[in-house]
Every structure is written in structure tokens, then in C-alpha cells.
Image: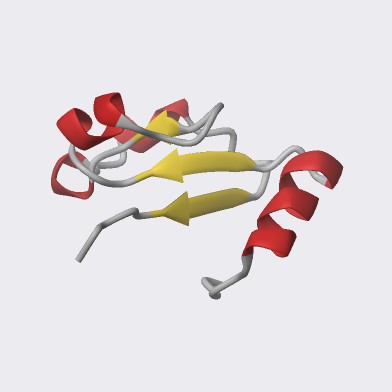
Length: 68
């Protein structure tokens, strides 16, 4: 079930549950700046095949950075 979490929750999930960090902006933005260890899965290209890189047994943290 999706839910919004804060930075402290992100840190906790990454360290305690081996969560996967997913950046959903286009590849260009990912290449310019992303969080360490993040995987790039652009929303515009997101399919079952592209999401297959994720481990379904681990939590997933999806984030989108935008300067708007």
C-alpha cells in the first residue's frame, strides 16, 4: 500500500529493511543528480519488464525530485 514517508523513515527503511530506492524522473535528470544507490525507473517508461529489476521481496521507496 503506497504511503508518504519522511526523510527519517527513508533512512530507517534503507538501513533496517534493505529497501530499494527508485527514482522515477527521466534518465537525464537521474544522471544529473540522484540519491546514492537509487535505481532509475522513469515513469514514462515504467512497465512490468522495466520493473523486473526490483526484488519483490524487499520494500520499495519511490521518489521524485523536482525543483518546481
